[in-house]
Structures are given as C-alpha cells and as structure tokens.
Amino acid sequence: MSRDITPKGFAGSLIGNCPGHSPHQSLQMGQWVKLICGASYQDMPTVQRLVMLYALAGVDCIDVAADSAVVAAARRGLEDAVHLAGYLGDCLLGDRVAFSAANRHTLPWLMVSLNDSEDPHFRKAHFDAAHCPPDCDRPCDPICPTAAIQFQAANNGSVETSLCYGCGRCIAVCPENNIEARSYLASPEAFSREQLAQIDAVEIHTQTGHQAEFEQLWQRLQPWRSTLKLISISCPDHDQVVPYLWDLYNLMAPLDLPLVWQTDGRPMSGDLGKGTTHATIRLAQKILDARLPGYVQPAGGTNGYTIDKLVALDLVNTTRSDSLLSDFSPNSLSSPQEVAVNHHGVVLTRNPVRKTISGIAYGSYGRSQVLPLLDAIDQELQPWLGNGSLVQRTTGHSGSLQAPTLTADADIPPWQRLDSAFGQGLTLVQQLVGQLKVDRPLLSTRYG
Image (cartoon, rainbow, N blue to C red; front, side, top):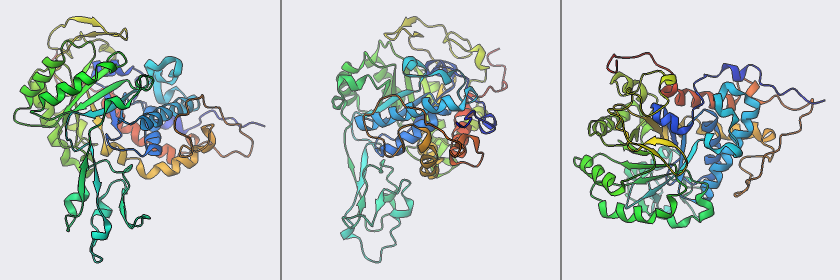
C-alpha cells in the first residue's frame, strides 16, 4: 500500500513570503533577492544543495562560478527544487510552484561571475605545510569558513581548492606569512554555445580605473548577448567610483537588457558580524544619489541586519507589491523612461533611475545559514529525489526526476517533520529571502 505524501503541518508552518513574481518583476518592484554561491567556489554538491534550498525559498537569482561543471550542478539543484515543489505545495512558492523545464521563465535566473582584472573574488589560497613550524597553533584552520584548509590531506597539508572561495582570512592570520593568494581570470571562452544556453545572466567584477580591461572583456562577451537576460556590474567603493561607473555605462550603452549595479561594500564578510553591513549601505546610497541608470543591489557585508537598516534609511520601496507591476510606477522611478522590448520579448524601460534599492544579494552570510545542515538534508532527501543522493548524482545529468515508489514502511517525508534538517534549512532561507519580499507599511509619504 502506498503512503499518502500530501504535505501535513510542516509546509503550512513556513513563512509565506514568496509572492510568485518572475525574477524580472521582482527587480522592477524592488524585491529582487540573489544568492551568491561564490565566484571561486567549486564544491559542486554544496552548490547543488544551496541552489535547491534557495530556489524553494523563492530567490530570484543564483550567482555561481564561471565553471561549466558548477553551472551543471546548479541546474541540477533547480531540477531538485522543481521536483520537491510537487510535494511541498504552493504555500512555499506561490505561482512559482508551476516552474518546470517547459516554463523556464519562472525559474530563478542563473548567473555566472567574470572578472576583468585581478579581484579578491577570483583567487585561491595556497600554502606548503612543510614550511609550517611544528608548534604552530594553526589559526588558519578554525578561521576558514568552508574547511578548505586540510592539514590531514594526503600531501601533508594544503588547501582544497574546490572549497576555497578566496576570502583571505587565513592569509591575514598566518603568523609565518606562509599562505599566499593565487589569482586568476575567469574566461568567457570556456563555455560552448550549448553551455551558454544554461546561463541567464552575467556579472562583471571590476575596479575603478580599469576602463580598458572592462572594455576588452565587454567585447569578448558579445557571443553571450543573445542568451542573456541581465547584466550586473560589481565594483567596490572608491573616491572616483561614480565617474568610473558612468564611463562603464556609456561604454555599454545602448543596452536592451536590465542593468544592475552591485555595490560591493565589504566583500565576502557578511558572516563576520552585523557591522559589516555599513559599508555596503554607504556605497548603495552613493550610487543611488549618483542617479546612474539601472538597478542598485547591495552585496558584500550583507546579513540579517541589512534590510532593517535599509528600511530605516528609507532605501527600500515600501509600496505594496500588487501596485508595482511595471517600471512606470512613480514609486520606483524618477521619471518615465523610453520603452524597449528586448530579445527575450520582455517589455522594459531602457535604463530606469531608481530612488531606492532594487534588491539585495547574500553571499557568505546566506551560505553560512545552512552549511551545517546540508549533509543531514542530503540524507533526508535521498529517497525523494528519484536518482539517489545529491552527492552521488553525476555531472551533466539533465533527465527528468522520477518520483520514488513509497511503501507503508517508508520514512515520513522530511517536509512533514518539524524537526527535520530540511525543514530547519528551508525555514532559515525563507526568513532571509522574505525580509525584502514581504509587504511593508509605508514609512513616509514621500511618494504621495
């Protein structure tokens, strides 16, 4: 006899914070939320599980390393989310419960990050343990957020490069200055035309004064343009950052894609404490004040405190979401803009000028919320994902997932258990994603 797998209790207890809008609509309404898996992070099983959880929570975009195997792992995570959504019901995803391979426009957009020059997001730590004193306290080991430093490795100690995402914390604490950073350039030519079809958006990491390097990379991205839905520019603060971003805008114009300015206040630091959010808020305010055409999205130091601080500063659009379904709302634009229809058939204003942020990205903080739970989640979901363990599934698999055959002796599904790791993880990410997506009371009458 088969077991009834209709969700009971758990799904209904989750926060209903996902309004079911497409990623582009979320961007227009100021409710865009992005997960950053890490421009240098290549632990594919972890990426797959992070993508699955955050997709179920209603995230709009997921940023991964420009590595075809990592992109494939992220796509498998989206497949897992689609499969589990069939069990969990529309209380989790709103309209997005219908997302499928046939309706890709309702899936979170998958973004890859590229760099035009040396950048802290595109580096790996390296050291030779043979040069470490035997009596060293090894402060690098506990400070690593992904356990990438492995002194028990077969080669007598090293950095597991797939786990390192370049935060540099180990470099700063090494008493022997024995750890170095090895930088690299992510190559857009590494993707075939077939692989480009799996990528929805691209983010370019740049720094003030790199106009020539940016232009060179921009020209190399021309083969990508026909497949992309969005361009994002990530740049840290500098006393000349505003004129530099204007230079980049003029170089790229005219654009038939939405453009996001990612204000990278304090890179890869959101999990260090609530104070890290101040730098990204200051930079976001600077870019908003500069009236740059495009959408502004804070990152770098964002954490669970960021949205409340942005709301207190009146930098979050507080108009209810059902009244913000186009770029022409007076609540989100300074003036009407020219209408364009891009190559995806999306109607948009060419370059809206925003008064408030359009979204937020969570990187190290977003990952740290659920990393300790991922192995347990993997074990709980093995019988429910059709092809076995998330860890064991092979790169490149893109076939449809088959529903498990359940018997009277089958375990209770994790979404029916309030104490499950899956339930805890999904609740955590829903709370984080939902901070920007919930309807808020108006904080002022600035927009009338």
